[in-house]
Structures are given as structure tokens and as C-alpha cells.
Length: 73
Image 1 (cartoon, rainbow, N blue to C red):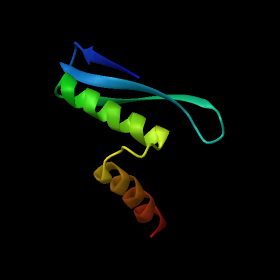
Image 2 (image 1 turned 135 degrees about the vertical axis):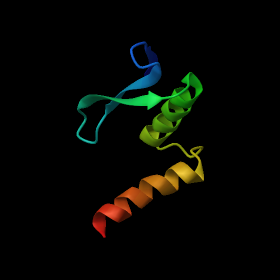
Image 3 (image 1 turned 180 degrees about the vertical axis):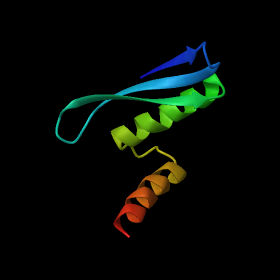
């Protein structure tokens, strides 16, 4: 993952690379962070979610499960 500043808009973005459940390498990005710190915090949470580590916050765990629940029902 990498954090970059978009000089045209003055916002920050995160480029995120991961391996999906099929073993395929994917790349995506999230843009529009007002500060570098916000972008880095999102990057950290995304890494924890991808790695499924036990030290992820309850809020991020709950949000992931909530999105799945809303898609089903």
C-alpha cells in the first residue's frame, strides 16, 4: 500500500494491492482523504481487514459484517 498526495485536488489517496480469495492479485485505490493521517489510518484498517488479524478494532470488524448483512437482506 502507498499513500500519495493529489496535487490537482489537494487531497490524499491510497493505492491498495491485495490477493483475492481466488489467489488473483488486484489493485484498487481510495481517494479524497483530507489529510495524510486519515489516508494512513484507512490504509492500516484495510491491511488489518485483509489479513484478518485478531488485533483489528471491533468497529472495523462490525462494519465489514454489517455490509455483508445489508447485501443479503
